Length: 220
Ligand SMILES: Nc1ncnc2c1ncn2[C@@H]1O[C@H](COP(=O)(O)OP(=O)(O)OP(=O)(O)O)[C@@H](O)[C@H]1O
Image (cartoon, rainbow, N blue to C red; front, top):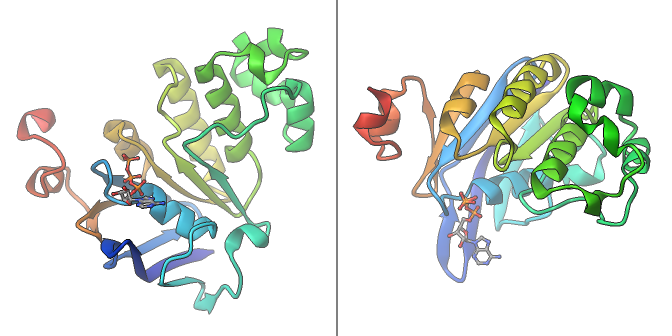
């Protein structure tokens, strides 16, 4: 499956946010989106998911356009930046609702074993983020969007997620964004930088310096 999005025209109160976007993503390859604060990364993911309507957009898969928002098709999973799970839900029920194996999860994240009977509100915000990111990543959707999956997560867990992403990408299109650019670059097969409303494919790390996203000292 190949997913392409272009011809996006998004503005708020006359301020253009996205207008020169072309992003192509495919099964077997992870697509990473980088960009400064406010460059439109979350808006881009929301447009793809379908809960933000720009003036115009063209989203297609293998040359076929989607007639309705992708979230209505059931083929897409989206990890937003904001908390996803109701605080009073029991964690083992959450896994049942998402049809994701609790045993497999605790196999990867053993320190969570003690939480089987706990509620979401009993966990730290970082622990909740680990569960949310895992549930979306393992949701077996054809398209998976992850908005800042590495933020608030401890380095050891980030490494586990990068390993899982490399497994899941064989069966799903994965598009993700984060300010942890080194993790994004390591796990992504294709990188796009959003800047001034446009996307640019990044091949060499030096381009991120030339585009004013990184300081030269950071890549030496
Ligand atoms: N509902 C809204 N109303 C007005 N402006 C908005 C709205 N949503 C987003 N924006 C603006 O659109 C721009 C892009 O926002 P977006 O959240 O996509 O940026 P981002 O790249 O994800 O930023 P960050 O890295 O800080 O999360 C910002 O300037 C933001 O202020």
